[in-house]
Amino acid sequence: MRVFYDRALDAAATFWRIFRRDGITFGFTSHDRDLTFGGIVHRAAPGMVPTAIRMTSDLSEDSAGVEGALSHDSISEEDLASGLFDHATVEIGIVDWETFDYHGLFSGTLGRIEDDSRGFSAELKSAKNVLEQDLVPRTSPTCRALFCGPGCGLSAIKFTKRTALSAIDFDLNRVQFNGLTSSLYIDGQLRFLDGPQTGTPFGILGVYSNWLTLDRPIAKTTSIGIAAELREGCDHTLSSCSDRFGNAINFRGEPFLPGNDLLARYGQSSG
Image (cartoon, rainbow, N blue to C red; front, side):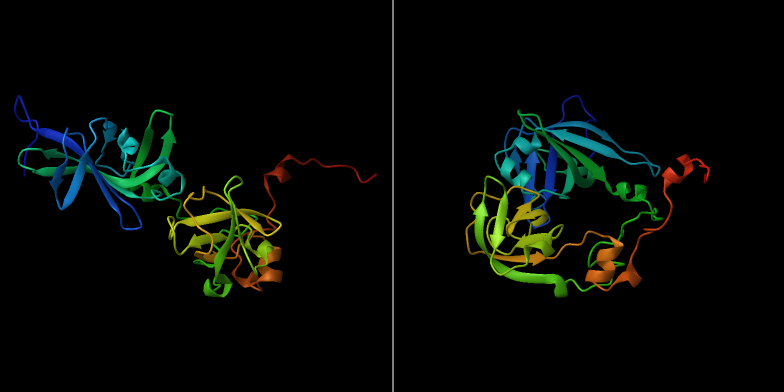
């Protein structure tokens, strides 16, 4: 394996690869010209700076950060806002720009992305991040199960409807579909099956007069009439689980468990 920085002058450059969940791959390098290796074209982006890469041999979380990579012309603010890069896989490494020998230094997923008006910076999370998740569920008055997901037991197909987009309000970031009981879709999910945001999940924040308000910006090139898939929402309360879905037997919560406020109470005389 190529050993880097073992000489006074070394032909080394940093590279980044971003693998989006929709199958699109981006490659960048800190070199001053494009480099092709590993079957991927890495676009020249000399402004990219790895802020820090920390790797450990124990089970503690590895961390990394990068500034400037997301300001490249191939990644737009609209794509970031629309969620196309959410949970994308990222690889960072070093490459010899003469022989194209390369070595990976870090791999993980995109975490928090910040915009400081000059460009973007991203936090990267390694695979060890999974080890920090709680394995034992904590008590809660509402259901912890994902609606139609593991533990819920309900069929997603039963509560999903395919329809066509009938109206868009870009100013208020909301959409409308004909023939729907809109109130059923609060806290639900929308996926466009065509257009610039195909497959991107949208959360439905609220309903007003058959308009569905979404949790992420709608692409300006989205057109009326494109197909969409809508899944009903659930407020995760016991009453909804029992009365609306008849699924109280699978409720994953403790609605009648006394809370911490019980410890702050004090006795009162009956007189």
